[in-house]
Length: 438
Ligand code: S3P
Image (tube, rainbow, N blue to C red; front, side, top):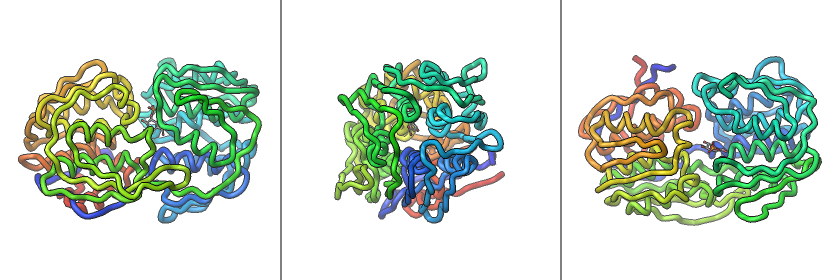
């Protein structure tokens, strides 16, 4: 459905309360660890988006019994670290970089060969960042000449632990190597240049697997132990809540409560950056759920001003920049992002695609090699290409709250990869959005 478009009428405010779908990163990991554990894992709040379903289907194809998902409930009948079976054919990871990169770590340690493939976006994304360190561990993986998928992963290799300094702050690479470390002889130690999301570490500990967290930059795991199934309550995804945090901040009259949102400190850069810009966000009723901190977030409209985004916040808000750019476009003055080259290799080149969309709507946006300079202004009516990137599509949808006329956003089907039901929830909150299939 490349042709799915959003038509969004201008104006309105976001009000009431809502719960966005489950956290994508945690949902992927709950399936993976549940499958590799001994015993049963029950998951509630699971994200039934296409990305996490790709992970779920891959484990089904390798012989794991998984009941559901039904209204966010999934039961995984774990097979243990050595219980997976060879799948009948290639495993299709769709649009999901997290599935492909984390699964490559697991599959490098199996006794059978596998092939990982994906859609046109995923097969353009860089995979050497995982295949290079996995090869150092003893894995045998073939990529295309460009270092991309399909990945041909050869089984029956002896993996050994390595001491690895990540060249970029990437939770996907860190998690891939920790998962391979489960199958490696000796210690796998990973050091990050800056902290990236730590859901894998928290979940390993939750499944009873010993882990050494040496400081906030280094983690070490020793192979050969065992994971034990458990119950996991997946909080709402802060990355999905981000569209509403930005939307309510820019739309006069907004007052919105986002319920049960994950506020893991390795993810909360979006709240910090919006607050630096003057946003009114309250963190209410903080509590723990399944080893992760959660809270309700109340956001009200506030006048925003441009900021120079501190580089140390970049890895902590890496998926939220499309929404933050919309907030910056509505802010008084200039916002400058640097140190964010990683944005160029997400589901799309998010620096270029956002700059093009902002420019199409009359906002001055100048891309730089590692960031974007945005001058606050007023959105005109217009048409935006999302290039099949879910977060670009949803970001421009909320821009309509401050546009002078309707916005037409093209190529929106991939919103289902991370946020099924986005249109319905956004409508209920006050966005005048409808889907069109021309
Ligand atoms: C993710 C890590 C991040 C993020 C992605 C989810 C994860 O990617 O962009 O959406 O679940 O580990 P990188 O590790 O490439 O930064």
